[in-house]
Length: 491
Image (cartoon, rainbow, N blue to C red; front, side, top):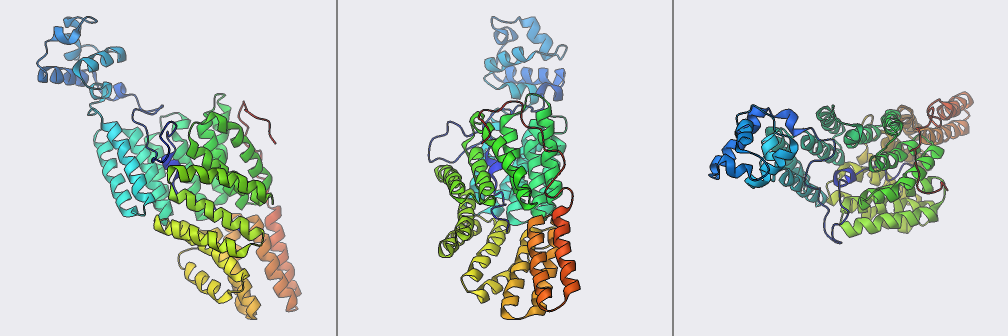
């Protein structure tokens, strides 16, 4: 069963945290991100000159006083009249003389607005993590209006990405994709690293919706393009490699997931953002668990949890408890697994991450069933299926149907068990969840064989085997090219 596949918003936070004090919430940096649109390209020489003249007049300075010792009054006059475009060096000098910012002169953006908008992003992050999702979304909408009013497409894109992750948390997958699409449109003329977060958001939305193959395609294509450029961005690549692990595992491509984990670990020493690295460690734990290396998985999980506790990020901390519940389940420590999953569920609900909470409930139901509480598990799963299905948590909806099939089969209700197994199969086929598909097909085949329906049983077994052998499931074509440089030997 897939576990820990949600992304509760790490990408939202992972812009710059190095150097922030221990125990404080991370804040996004002020200033213009690399790849932001050129201010000068958006303002004409006449508009820039008018701003300089207005600010000079407000401060009752002469052109000679503004020029200082570096320029002449005639040069200032020419710039103010819009007859010449001041260079960046000149604009920065004049901005300092006027007590303002380069951006205010070059773009007409009020001094401090970028920093204020990014502080607003941090506040929305805090509200979301406290469970005030509606307030977080309204804060982001207000920030978006201000950024659009002042023509700041790079910040508009960042806000759209943050909004997209808000939508993912509550299960609005279509709305999330629209937000990520808007971000990409705003960044259409920017270098690929500036677009990575929006592309990653799209991939997560498709993966959560059940279109795992397309999620892999988006991520692999972006990785190839970044690496093919010769000078890849380590932080962007780490984010992509860590993200692609989940869809790889869902498709049964364990070897490729392990390779992605190794490549990301190679990049980690070159990435300053501790929360981004923690997200990688959580993904590596998933990979190791998928390969049965549970003690190593626990070690990486501890590393991730320490960072989330330091930064007080409850949504991501919940993911660690979710993963630890899975590890306990695989070790047969079912009481501890139930405790961890229950804790993760409570944390996700309290942070408003309803969609991810529903996924945890599927796994919690599995543990309760294994502990002999089939009726409790059945009640939980039946309620969950109202909110999960094709295009909306298909992998976990299939897991719910499969588990309900097991419960009904154990109870002797074979017709209903068959119905649930058959409901799970098309969801798993559509999502390319090859391992889960093979398991469900085996359960259905065994059920049919015990009833003497041999032809139906053979058809069910063949259906599972066909999924495993399907091109692009365990083999996805050529693997993405590795980064040109690594910092540690691949283990």
